[in-house]
Image (tube, rainbow, N blue to C red; front, top):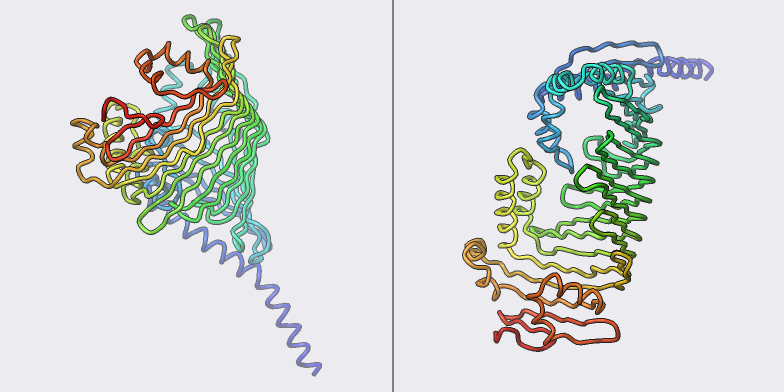
Length: 461
């Protein structure tokens, strides 16, 4: 019995001693597999350094984003979001530093990862050099000091992760006197699942701010207190919600003077789900207050609400449109617009139902005048039509029998009066409207090719 107990203790000691070695090889094998995948998909390993002790290991890599087309294809095939062509072009040639630390005890502790750009791409660097040599040096020094750094702690066992983005609070004066300011504070994130396509992702940050200004011009973009939460079962089934305390956008130049757009307390929700070959997409947004202040006008809107759903979307046509939108080329806007338009018409030709449950604003104040508010809801059913695109290009009126439409609108008399001033052709609707208190009521129905407004036929059809 004692002898057996000694053997058992000896076995425990041997296993305990072997655990760090085994753990090291387990994690190392996982890392080597991932690095080899990167090598096969457009990434060149410029440097690889390993440091190992008995209980822990560390690795340093330098990855050159050599062929971003290959790498983007690899990422896009496994991710819920697509990498745009502009980002692909910007990143190609960028050198990234990656530091990893992990315990050699298997499944104990997280893998700690730091990711940071070391050098910008050759194209971006050459552009900076031409514009301002001193600014080019400033940016390079900023990157060498790990000015942009993403930290991540990843648990291999349960695939949970958490991390942060290093605070950025920089200001620089260019040789022409222009001032650049960048601020990103208290940015954190956490989630679960594969890092390429996490099943759950939560993001928070306190402040994000960008300013570019000189004596005559200014651009300011600022966002405060953002919280977002997403769950992603697949590319077609996901939910995402976000809250923002405030957003500001300011533009100033010698022509338009100063224009300011500010949004307070904004909530957004987006969801998508798949049912066989058909998809459903829903979007909801609420803004407590919207302020627009410019040389031309001053606008204040309170309690803006928007809630819409698309049903019976063809899965394949929807995917084609999403890919086209994600890969759109801004250098060729007209060609891109034509492709997107044709893809959208193709999606509509498969049949779709659109339900605008609510589009409303409780109060609108325009140039100091209180116009009150409005509320709109509508439903649109488009039947499947293989000749949809031909009819749309020749004359959309041929599509009327393929559609059913029901719109209900309640708008204040003050707003309706403003609309008639801006669009005199809508004066004809005065013969069909109903009045209810201080509001104008409209119910527009299209059924079997016939239009009716508040029960009355329009244009004799």
